[in-house]
Image (cartoon, rainbow, N blue to C red):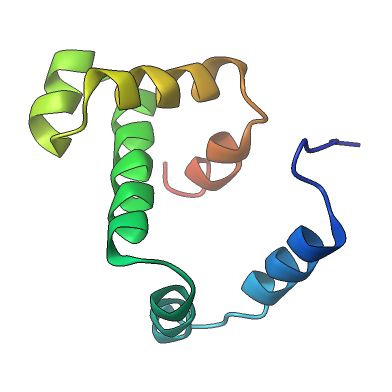
Length: 95
């Protein structure tokens, strides 16, 4: 069983709430209330970086396509290689 460093009753409640979202509009409504515009843009950018890296794109190409910094690209790459496999779980459905 996976053990998260962020596990708490409050985090459990948050994730259970996310699992209740059924449509894209539900997601927009919830995350628009929960997050700042910059946070949503950052999440979206990291996910785009992960998708491109998983396809085998080079760092320089990913930077050009997403506008992400090399630090962000390196962090996402580290998560893809050595992380909790969260990206891999959702990217498997995309391939």
